[in-house]
Amino acid sequence: MDKMLIEFYKSGNIVIPLFLLKRYSDLKLELDEFIFLIYLSNKKDKSPFNPTQISEDLNISLKEVMKYISLLTDKKFLSVDVIKNEKNILEDVINLDNFYKKISLLAMSESNKNKTEMDKSVFTFIETEFGRTLSPMENEIIKSWLENGSTEELVKEAVKEATFNGVNNLRYIDKILYEWGKKGIKNKEDVEKNRNNHRQKDKEEQLEEIFDYNWFEEDDGDDE
Image (cartoon, rainbow, N blue to C red; front, side, top):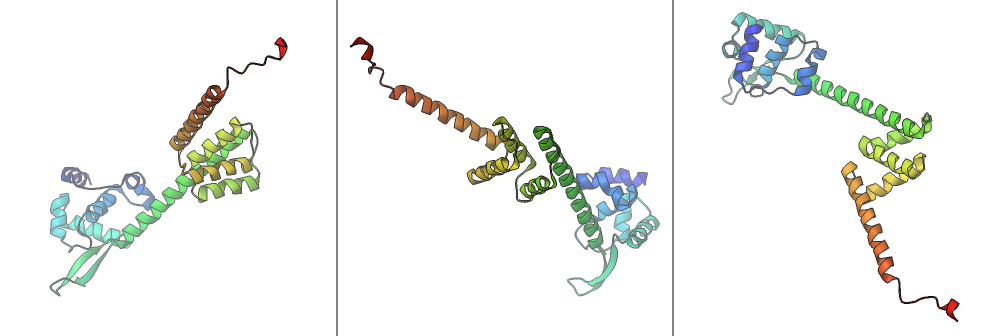
């Protein structure tokens, strides 16, 4: 394994998704098996099976190459298929479709895990802001916000907006999210920009009131 790892690093052009590097063990793979699969996946898809080339690239023996092929075939990560090439000649090719399917399932699992963690943080945040436990109905309403495109960040900003105005019910927050949606507000930066625009508009309206006031019209009732 050490020799393979050294050659793996030397190659300098192997691409490994970070999440896969962190979670390859969830696929029940040993590090050397994982490296072998990543090496194959960086080759042309369904390229001709060339044990000698693999042996040279990874600095392992032909016997070890065949051992990995057999082991990973048994684990259903790859298969060696026989196909006709462009010249209509039969040849062996490495098929990694099963490996890609397993990676896809792992990625989905990672995404669902992150979403669950995100959801929990939103619920906890709202309960802290409200100072009470959310009801089952309120949990469902919050879930619907997230499922319909409102981000965790945007929901938190709407909650802050509501509590700042002294309101702590989801109906009011839902209205805020609806109005923000119509204005194209999608994140914290958009919310801040919208608030700044409101402040600027308020200042302009105050200035207009000052300038519109007729300072020369005095109440002369007391002088008569």
